[in-house]
Length: 200
Image 1 (tube, rainbow, N blue to C red):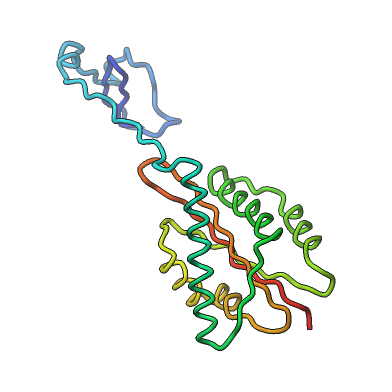
Image 2 (cartoon, one colour; image 1 turned 90 degrees about the vertical axis):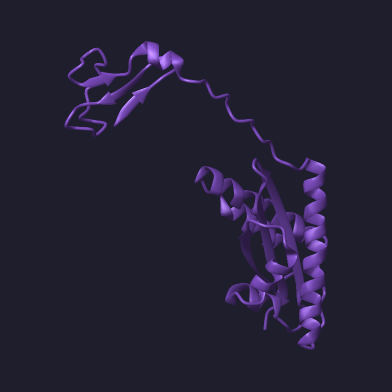
């Protein structure tokens, strides 16, 4: 602790020990604290607090962004697989909505440090696919909204590349996007890349 301040006090720590636990907080003791003259302190120009910048997107705009990113990523991945000679089928029904809950839980964990129960998500996936099918999925976090940069990451990262380029019997791909806007134009975007396929 090098100094203490409030609206009407500014004091410098004169003690040899400046760790929190070893510091005396008797501000009246001038051997421990050197206080600035209150008259001079009042002459200091008051600076207004900075304006609070709220998230720049409304909930409806966030939903539109998520839909646009999903459509763009589907287009990029389909084109990439066509270049490899692989046809692509997309699931736009139940599974994407289940993945939305998982992506929300990842953002919650980053904010709070607490992990939600993963078994509920796993059980929902198992109950949504047919017997003999498997599901592979990998979440990726981005701090931008460029679908091109996201796609480039997918085809260079080993985990997502394996899913994007997966082929075989009854392979269906899934893309789900969850965006969360914050102040200062900061955007947190989670993307789930997944595929359902028939077991060998």
